[in-house]
Length: 604
View (cartoon, rainbow, N blue to C red):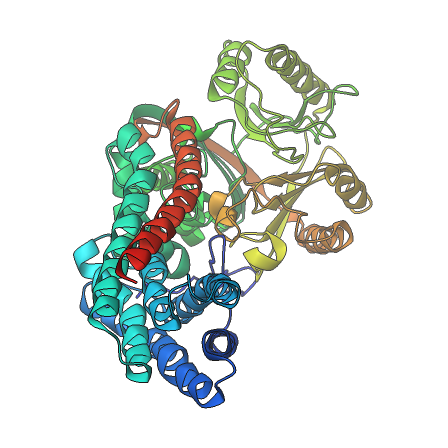
């Protein structure tokens, strides 16, 4: 069983993971009720107005097979090495009946209009077995076990029982029995053709079966199954390559006790769910432990090129972070500034701690998203060249518009960022004065991703009092902030502290609930979010106490990353897969109906 989520020492909360991934099957009692209703309608369509036959058909041909399939598909799948949740199995039985209903309506309508030319109802009962097997085998192959020999027994359960029930009701002729065998065979072949075609884009691009990853993906999202996680990370690792990364830590320590640590690894918190570097804020916080105090892991300038494929690579970053934490030099000395903006429209804001410049980047109210690592590397090399300042760069990631806001190397925005960062550091130096430093921190957890779009680390606030002013930083564990939300939140924060910024972690764990970007503010209103942020920031301000600041950095060579182009290749292949599946689902279903009709009229 997966480990329980840890309790946050600051908030005392435990965040329980509940992933759904795109679609959640209806509650069991709702689906069972649907099975009963669909069975009744089908029985009426086939045998009305013969009420005794309607009742027998309802029980034998539809309801009993549907309920048996609903409750036995799961154990039968498990017996053949697969896995299917009972709730999904019940819904699948209902889906089969719903698929059969329009076919039955059209057939019965044809019987009323052309009674002499249309095959009898017993042929219809046999005919429905083909679509039922097509849908069940297609579903169980992906959801339970990607093997026809292992998924077929459970797939056959409902159509075979339905055939048996119908044939008890009406004794079949040899021709009907032969037709039933053909219908099942055609259903299986059309399902196999659909699955093979849908799998082709990923096989062509990555030489791997995408369908075989569906079950591990479901298990990873739903229950964090370790075996499923290893299977998925193994897929990503095959296409990774080594890169030299860096870890920076800015820590604040009260006498004898660490209070807060801002961890800044050059790692992108993706690709998805809790795979690899996704859910990085929680993973790194756990790896640093109590020795770091409250850990904040903002988004650093990086994109999907720097996604880590496996937990092993995350552990290397964690190990380097612990080494930095344990080997700090003397506390940062010299002058300290508040959080300074050099001029209106600047993309950069800076707070100075001795020779360390904490630089925050945002394009809000314009869209702001990933900053290429090459841009940050240029800023680091140019502005830190003389050794007078060490840089800690943060991408605030706080104004989401789909497909906009990236800062790429060599663009006018990147050039402006270099200029603005230089000006922000100069302004912070001008505002810096000698004097004491005070730090306060607070957290709030217990957020549901599905309800709030906020990840396991919740909302974390850091307040720094320096140079006569209070600077407040709020970090929300989520993937960006709905465009337009940043400014009103910062205004609310500015009623509590003198200078403020709100950031998100870009944690891709929030994608798994609905498969989308799920920016903060999409599920939680601006008023509610502002209240939450203000409450946490107020507590952090009340926690202010004298502290010393420490800074350290360490290179981590040869860390495996997904690298340039992988995400684009994967998304393109997934898009091709979806398109292929949609087109082939229609094509194979029509082929199934056409072929089965040919068999029907040949044997009629």
